[in-house]
Image 1 (spheres, rainbow, N blue to C red):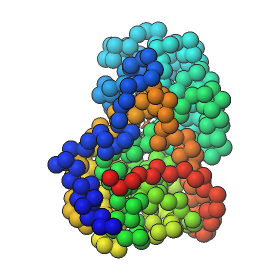
Image 2 (spheres, rainbow, N blue to C red; image 1 turned 180 degrees about the vertical axis):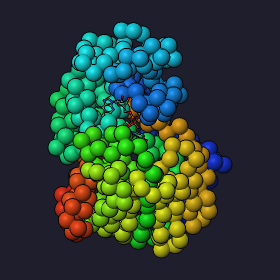
Image 3 (cartoon, rainbow, N blue to C red; image 1 turned 90 degrees about the vertical axis):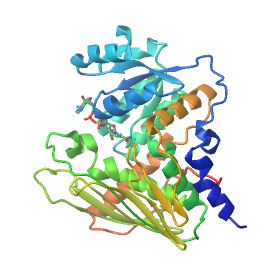
Length: 377
Ligand code: NAD
């Protein structure tokens, strides 16, 4: 089959505008549920909730910011006034469970330090609410299993805040890579790093972060490799290193790892100790596919052997949240599920295991088989 016309179509989607029909998770059929807009409560009002998620909720079609859960009393009045939130929809970490009696809250969005994701996701499910949990899903596979079980037992949906599955540049990478448009073999290089200097950040503490930049940033590289190949890795080896051991006492400053996939190799790096980097490059048999930057909220850029990707940046978080609202309203499955979150924690644990054993090669025989596969348009 001559795929060039399809590729051309893919690269020049209606002159650069992405159509909803080309991103199936954006398709909004009439919701079956009688509620047209779902109420979201954000748990943890830190940087990501304040500067990205709350403004993004304003941009959604199917949600509104109905409530907040915070341990900082001073934030309550500010948020109530800014987002028109009712006093009775404001909770703290102690009275959080009484949210079960609040019919205005449909979805709880957990945006706390990583080690707190499991507790609050499980409490939210027990309160009878659907949950979006930020990445990484948890700090262990064992916790991911408990979270999935709690949501299943409560018959509530769970999705992970993997915003890049809703980004058109990463979507193109998935479609072109997975469908082997530029050949059967690919070799990937990817890095997501920034310099972290704050000694008080929970990100430097294993108890809260579960690990170093791998948990926070490297998870994007891991995801990027899997969704570009559309395959699971078969073996990996990893090396951790730290330059500033006064700052990074119990997590690594840098993690580098290699993975073998059925269709090629991947070299990955993530660091809190090197200058900002955010790219994913796939060398194919017919040239290079590249996203640079690849993992940012905005300003993404991509190229293929046939030229620049002609799609546009979007509000990733708004699309991610709306897609989940439609999953709830139409009783459909999320593409970024708790099973996907568990798969990634499984691989993160294997990377940590290899690094702890000086780069021992680890065979991956039972990776949870969960993939976001997309056809060529
Ligand atoms: P942050 O430190 O800015 O916010 C954390 C919030 O948790 C704060 O409001 C803090 O008060 C609260 N908190 C409650 N108990 C705490 C405790 N014991 N220690 C520290 N903080 C406590 O962090 P953030 O950057 O907003 O990250 C929060 C979560 O969101 C993390 O899991 C992170 O991985 C995720 N995140 C995701 C993205 C993304 O692009 N999807 C981007 C940034 C952060």
